[in-house]
Amino acid sequence: MNTNKTYVAFDAQGVFDHQNSNLPYFNQMKEWQNQYPQRFHFLNLQDVEFSSLNDDWADSTFKVRCLRQMEEADNLLVVASKLVNVESLTLNWQISRAVNRFHLPVVVVYADYAMLDDSSIKDYWPYLPNKIRKYITRDSARMSHVPLTRDKLERALGAFSVKKSLYPWSSTTIY
Image (tube, rainbow, N blue to C red):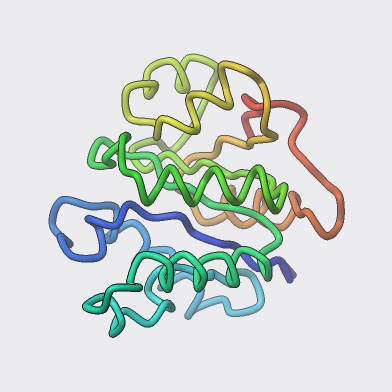
């Protein structure tokens, strides 16, 4: 049983542009959460109230709400796909805060793979968010790289937790 809470970092365009985003992959993971509630617990942008996005404080309100969720989280999940906006300010800000402020272990899930090996990270390099590439290059964050399969994702999210002090070996740990 996985009791870890997982913060899912998203590119903001994915919230508004469902066709050209990672939202379908996230919806697949939410379906797994619905089917197996003891195995998955996702915290994400969809749980943040967007009604205040029209006021002058929208950016700070949004960030405060994201930080509250990150504070509750045990790990961070980033979906890598060919649709991700690698330069997204929102996505890279979330990754940076989760790693630097909350020291969350990162699980990068590769949407187009059923299996991973060492060359997978190199092949997918152009599709990884800028902050993920930076942390890999500097080996400055603990990351696990997993394919988008329910069993591998479940094991990685259950294994790596800031509250249990269990982390991947390095920034390129393949799980």
